[in-house]
Length: 569
Image 1 (cartoon, helix red, strand yellow):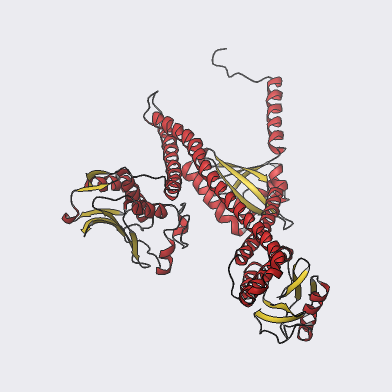
Image 2 (cartoon, rainbow, N blue to C red):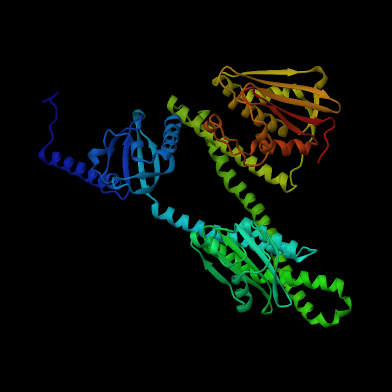
C-alpha cells in the first residue's frame, strides 16, 4: 500500500551480509597494514596485518595513541606528518621505526590520507629489508670513498717537490692519521742496508728500529702484530711503552727493493678499510720516497747522473702514469660537472612543466571559469596553488644559484621607482605578517633617491627572501622594518627585525648554500638553506655587498648595497 516501508528479502540480507564479509576479509588480509586514527592520533580501526606487525591482537590496538607504537625518537616525525595532514588536508608520507612486543625494531613507510571528521587512514609498509640493504650499500660506498680519498691525497703529496724524505714522511703520516685508525707512527728509511728512524707521529722518534720493523725489512712483507694491553709495555718495537692493540709494519718498495718502512699503531685495531688504504698507497709511497732520495742525490752527485739514467727513466714512466691517472680524474670531474648542468636543465623542464600545469589549472578552478565550487573546494584549490607556487619558487632558487655559479646568469638592468619596488615586495609578505601578528614598516630616506638602476625582478627576489626570513623568525607582536638610504656611490637597503637574533660565531655560515642554523625556534620551520646564499650571489652580481648585524635576543639587520649605475660582475 502507498506509504508502506519496503522490507528486505532474506536473499537481499544474505547478499548484503556477504558483501560486508568480503569487504572485511579484504581489509584484514591486505598485504599492508591499515589503521584509522582520530585527530588526536588515537587508533579507531586496525586490520590484522597492522596488528601482526606489532605482534598484538587488532582489538588491543584500539583506543591506543599510535605514537605509543613507535620509537620515542621518531614520534616528532609522526607528529609533524599528522599535523601537516590536519592543516593541509592532503596526503602525507614519512618513514619511522616501530617497536613490537618482542622489542624488535622495524622500519615502516607510513602514508596518511585525510578522512572526514578530522580522522585519517594510515597505510603501513614494512621497509626494514630495504633499509638494511641501503645501510650496507651506503657503508660500502663510504669505505670505497675513504680509500679513494686517501689514495688521491697521497698521490697529491707525491707530486710535490719535497726538500727531504723526513718532511715527506711526516706529511704522509698526518694524512694517514686523518684517513685511518692511526694514533701513532714511525717512519724509517734504508741507508746502507740499515733502517734509520727519520720521523714520528704521536710518539718520540726512537733511536733504533724495533724488531718488527727489522723483520718487515728483511722479509719484504707486511708484518701485523696484535697485542694485549697488558703486554704493550713489553712490545719489541720503536714505540716504547705506547699502549697499542695492533702494530703494522709496512715495507715501501720500488722494483722489489725496500726503500723505507712505515710502522703504524692503533689503540683499537685496524679495520678492513684501514688495511685497504695501507696496501693501496704502499707502492706509491715507495715511489715517492725513492723519487725524493734520487732528487737529493742528483743535486749532490750530478756527475753520476748517467749511472742512474735507466732507473730514473723507469721512475719517470711510473710518475707519468700517476699524472695520467690524475688527468683522467680531472676529465671525469669535468664530465660530472657537465652531467650536473644537464641534470639541472632536464629537471628544470621536467619539474617546471607539470608544476606550471598544476598552477594554471588551480588558478582556473579558483577563478571558477567552469562553474562555482564550494568553500571547502576553494580551500583545497588554494592549498594546491600555494604549494605549487612554493615548490616552483624552490626549483627556481636552485636553478638560479646553479646559473650564477656556472657564470650563465645575466642581469636585465633597468631603471624603476625604488619605493614602488619595495612596497611590492612588502605586499607579498603582508598577509603572512598579519597572520603572525608581525608589523611591517618602510622607511625611505630622501638621500636614497626615487629611481634605482638594477634588475628589478632579482631585486624583488632578494627582498622577498630577506622579508620572508624576517617575518618567519619574528615572534608575534614583533616588527620588521625596511629602510633605504644612500652611502657614497651606493644605495643601501636594510631589513631589520625584532626576532630571535643570531650568534656571532654562526654568521659566517649563514650565506653558504644548504646551511641552516640549529635552535629550538628555527627547528619549527622548514627551508632549503638556499635563500641567503642566493641573496649573496645576486647582490654580488650587481656589484654590491651583503652583511649582517645581529646578536641573540635582539633581532637581526640584513643590509646590502646596489651601486649607482649597477655594474655587472
